[in-house]
Picture 1: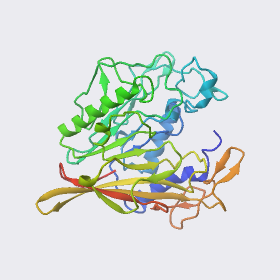
Picture 2 (picture 1 turned 30 degrees about the horizontal axis):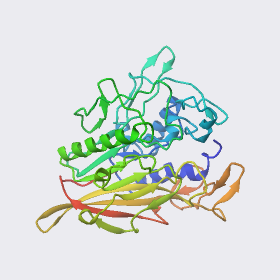
Picture 3 (picture 1 turned 90 degrees about the vertical axis):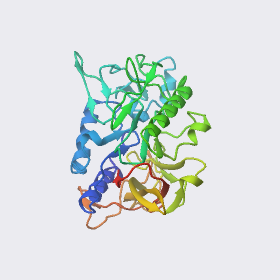
Picture 4 (picture 1 turned 180 degrees about the vertical axis):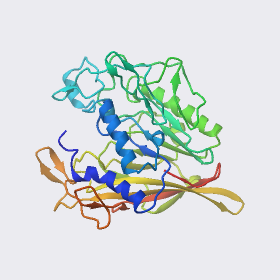
Length: 378
């Protein structure tokens, strides 16, 4: 789109590499909250991004431990955005094909193709070549010893919620018994209806209800909800209030509901704590930093009670070196075309980059009863 090749976008990979190579971090999984390289399901983009994560994370996180959440630019390159209003009777199509600001047909939805929720795309090759990786909802049990249950919903942030004519809306749903993760499936296949689409409110609520029940069956005590966009999809407060933390992207900025370095106990939480961490990749001039988060789970004992502290640490990989943020360019406002040099960091050609404690917000700690045992990190 003419804005993704800014230095700040590349800094995210280099900062992650510094975090692992120079700072000794050993994450066991990677969670991506949508808009993965603006690929629209393109197999070329998916493969390139998969290889990039292995390269910059130095194989620390295996391919099958990278977990993406669906964003609007994962449905189509242009994001099924307001340009679709020009073709009100057509769906937003999967892929990258487009005319001006409108998506064009490129690929089919295939029941044989699945995103296994282990991050491992299983593509099939028909007469027309590889088919697309379907969007879906899933849960993650990353470790049976962990107290954390991850719930990946489908609030993609699209303007057009009707996709590709052949996207299924099956409602006979069930959970397969699959560890470490499972997809919300029907007898026929995955459910790919956006929560903001027709019937999506009821669908997302059903998904949350089943996910919470599944997490408790697995003896989890902390529930983290991940969606690309923050929106009033499921309006059942009795379900929403059971979510401990809600992590989103979509808005190209950063924000957290709690003060930096603060601590919140589950017993005193009245609503989901929130983290917006969308300040990476596409630069809209909304933030002068590019960031990622690091989750660490640390069990401890408080008297006779077993508890766990879940640390949400935020790191910056780029601090803008422009004289003002935002600046206005031909493609709109921007902040990340230049980053401050961080001597001793990873230098991929644009200057050294490091993972540094968040300049504007640095995360918080969530404290809760421990369901299981063992320190883990993501």
